[in-house]
Image 1 (tube, rainbow, N blue to C red):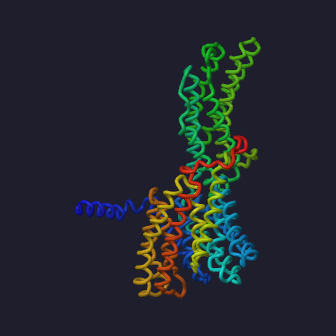
Image 2: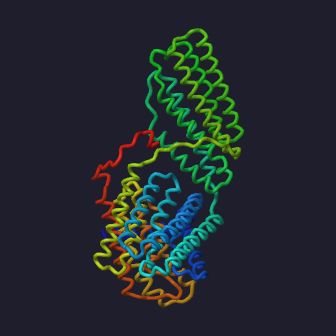
Image 3: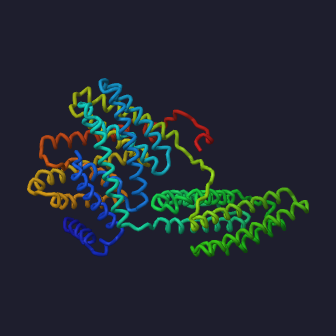
Amino acid sequence: MLHRALSGAGGRITKLLDPAFLLTPQWAYIFKSVASAALAYLVAYVLQLETPYSAASTVLLVTHMNQGVVLAKGSWRLIGTMIGGLVAILLMGLFIQAPSLFLISFGVWLGLCSMAATVLRHFRAVGAAVAGYTVGFATYGALEMPEHALNVVLGRTATVAVGVACLGLVTALFSKRATRERLEAAIAHQINNVGKLVLDRVSREHSADASPDLVAGSFAIDDLLELSRSESPEVAICADAVREGLASLFGATLGAMEIAFGATFNQPAVVAAREQISSHLPDAMRLVESGQESQVKKALATVAQLRHRLNAIAKDSEANGTDPQVLVTLDLLSEIVADWEGAVIGLVRLYNGRAHHSPDFRFHRDWEGGTRNAIRSVIGIVSGGAFGIATGWHDWSLLLLLLAPYSVILATTGNPTAGAVSFVKGTAAAAIPAFICAFFILPEIQGFPFLIIVMVPFWIAGLYATTIPRYTFAGLAYLVAFNTFISATNPMTFDMPGYFNKVLGWMIAVIATWLVLKLVLESSRFPWRPFRLSQAAMA
C-alpha cells in the first residue's frame, strides 16, 4: 500500500511539472496571482505601509481566472472598504468607552450588510459584505488605542487599494478579454435551445416541459453578462439591451411551456401557423448558430417575416369568426415568436455595441435568507465579543476580526457549515508551513527578492488548491492565514510566543465561526421563518 501511495504521489508531481500542464489556464492564473501578490508586497514596502502582507492577502482573495471578476470584485471590495472604514470611525467615536454598545452596534451593522450581501446580485454583494466586516479589521488594534483609529482605517484602505491596483494591473497586462466572445456564443446557443423547445412544442399535441438546465442557462448568461460588462466598456453600454433580450428569451421559454393545444391542434388556422413556425424558425436558428453579425441580422429579418405571417393568419381567422380558443392559441404562438425575435434583437444590439435604455428588471430577492443571515451575524458578533471580554482575553478583538468576514462570506454559500469546516482545515494547514518559513527560513535571508522567493512556493500550493472546487475554501483560508501568521513587515520581527498566541487565536476564531453557522438558525435544523413575504414582495 505504501508503494502504491508513493507511486500515486509521484504521478501527481510528474503531472504538475509537465510543461504542457504548466501552460494551462489554471497555471496561468496561479502565475499571475503570484506576480500580483509579489508586486503588492513591493509597493506596500515602498509606501511603508504598516501591514504590507495585507496587500498581498487582498490579491489572493480577489484573484480569479476571469479578468471581469478581478475588475468587478476588486472595485467593489475597495468601495466596501471605504464605506466600512467610515462606519468604523463613527462607531469608535461614539462607543469606544462602552464595549457592550460597540458590540451591539457593530453586530447590527454587520447584520444589515449580511442581509444586503444575501439579497443583492453579482458583485454588489461583495461590496456589502466587505463594508460589514471592515469594521472588524479597522478596529483591530485600535480599540485599546482609539487615538490611532484613523491611522488604522487609512492603513487598511491603503493596503486594499494597493492589492486591488496591483492585481488589476497584472491582470490587464497578461489576460485576454475573452468573456465577450463567450457571452455572444452563450446567447446564440441559448436562443437556439429555446427555439428547439418551441419547435418541439408546436410539432406535438403533447410534449415534455422545458428542462431545468434550459432555465438555468439563461441565469448563467446573466452572470456572464455581468463579467463581460466589467471588462468591456462596449458591453457595458449595451448591457441593458442584452438583458432585455434575455427577458424576452424567458418569455419565449414560458410561452412554449404554456402551450396546450387540446382541441385546437388540428384546426386549419393552427395547423397553418404551426407549419409556418416549423418551416421558417429552423432557418433563423441556423443563421443564429453561425455566430456572425451579418447572419444574425438575416435571422432577425427571417423571424420578423414569420411573425408577420402569424399575425396575418390570426387576423384572417378573427375576420372569419373562428372559434375563440383558436384565436387564443394563435395569439400565444405569435407572442412566443415575438419573444424569440426580441432575444435575437438583444444579440444584434450586443454586436452593434450601442447604448439602449431599458426599464429596470426586478429579480428575486431572498429576504428570508437575508433576515436569517442578519440575525445570525448579530448573535455571532455580540456573543463572540462578550465571550472575549468575559474571559479576559487580551486579544479578544481578534475574534471580531475573523468571525465577521468568515461568517458573512460563508453564510451566502450553499453549505455554510461545510465551508466553515474547510476554513478550519485550511487555517490549521497553514500553521506548520508558516512556522517553518517564519523561524527557520526567513531569519537566514535578507532582502526583498529572497523574501518573495521563499514565499512563492507556499503561495502556489494555496492557489493550486483554490483551483480544485472541493478545496477552494480551504485554499483561501490557508493563503490568508499563512500570510498573516508570518506577518512579514519591514523590519521583520520574530516572536515565537506571539506566533503561537496568534495561531491559537485564529483557530479559536474559525472554530467559533463554525459553531455560529452550525448552531445559530441553521436552515437544515431550524426551519425558522420570521416573515412570510408575498411573491410580489420577493420579486
